[in-house]
Length: 378
Ligand SMILES: Cc1ncc(C[n+]2csc(CCOP(=O)(O)OP(=O)(O)O)c2C)c(N)n1
Image (cartoon, rainbow, N blue to C red; front, side):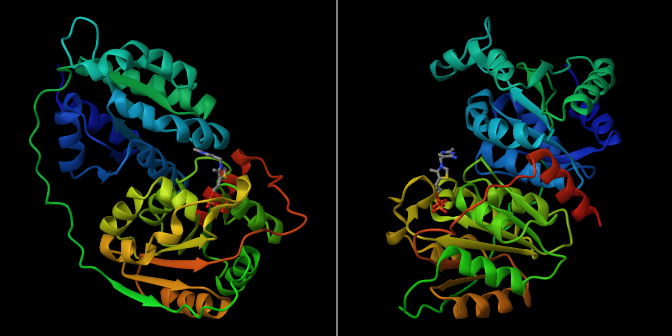
């Protein structure tokens, strides 16, 4: 058995000091220490997939990251690990527990995942080792993990068995409670603009110091078609992860960050509204391009028509949440958002359809990630 600091201190010495994840009872002493320690930053995520996205954003902003989850939650990580970390070659340490380990009595819901935890890691191309049980194993294991990540630019897994880490007290202030912000409706009821018209406006409004993260599908494709710049990150996969990545960037950078979300993607990971509202990065503007459908896959309706996203963002602690339905309202909301502390939500109701002809990012994802990282480092 080790003390949590037997890992956390040497990991911090190697630069791994940004932690995010969702707890597991096997992780309790370790996660308690990661939350309580002065040498680490911790973001409590709503889901493990969101934690992977937050860590990816933090890595882009120059941090070395650790994602922690139960092996049940590894299931929630599969999509972003395979369609964000893998294509973009974004590493992280991924510590997952081994609930249901053979010989350790456990609950029925862990039976299957316990049998496939290691092979699941292997399947998603995450090389892994057992989390160290002896303090003197930690340094060599971290060095081995660093070497693998440097060679592959992919996540490296550590599987934690029961009773690996000695009890550690949770010594942290309670989660922040944010007062609901303001909500403003600038809707006109006129004909709604196309997505690319809003993106054109956005490109006119933002300065060259602003980072833009576009959700999967046609948002990223349109942004790329209109302008390809180092400050753009086109999330080609990981649907729903744009705001999580934006949070990870915004918490670790002074630059303004604009997230371009879709209604389908936002609905897929609506828990992220709560995390963004609670951690409240002042430099984050969350633009939700709402066409009421999964436009990128053929126009199937989402349920966004009956959702008041501004009310949700407001209730989650965003400073301001606008609803608008034409370019003028979008410009006004953007001007106010840029002039005040965020996080802000701007829901823009847009029409269906996209630019013709519509390109696809020709810059490969690893290059998109690295030039974006270099831009953030300026
Ligand atoms: C996890 C996951 N599920 C499904 C898809 C397929 N997919 C790609 S884009 C898209 C629609 C996204 O809808 P929305 O966020 O509303 O954006 P829009 O296409 O309307 O711009 C879907 C379902 C995917 N890429 N990833």
